[in-house]
Image (tube, rainbow over all chains, first blue to last red; front, side, top):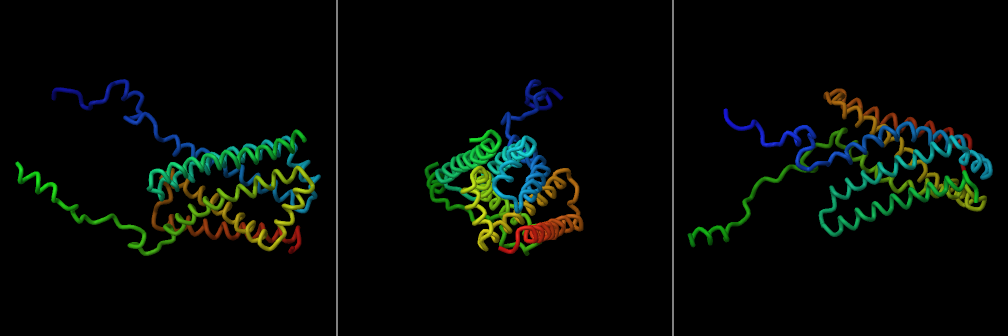
Length: 130
Length: 140
């Protein structure tokens, strides 16, 4: 039979990304952060439980210690990425009006960055002082 | 030609069947747990506000006292109890989805077992955690 078996160029075939060039980042990052979230959430819950009943000075000292602070910073980073993708999926599923959808997607990014940086600020302040 | 164009212009959209949606199906545990996974994700999203508040409050005695006042009030306890369950449920649900991502656990028995384990596990862990919290912190 004459002619190629398919119409994709050799380069396109080797790169294997199809016409869109991209599109699985959100799928992949959601799973990547999901895997990270499991041990980090268990660790964060453990830290929280260890702080029960302690006064502010003790809580601040523990939260400001290097290992605890780094675990908490990793936890915040991972959940912020995860929740931004998750909320975007919810908005894209249920909000069909184009301008409302874009507004909410922007608000989603603003909210996740703001709450993430607020948590990071709190942690850094506990580590590095006032 | 003219007659064809005008007949095209007058064409009304064909009444095609729409794809069935939620109200068509008998509620199933897997379906309900899929919805709950999304709702708990949504709750965790806004729960991060409490988490950030707690971290910022921890830096000052005044701020921490305010957070502790909230956390020991009955409404605060209720919210934190719900938040705990929501986080644990979403985490176990996430593990279930990661198992499903490998292509395993889709059999009629396995998928039912997985969602049941998700629900029972999340409630059990939350209750055990909160018994410990109440024992440590007192009732109010």
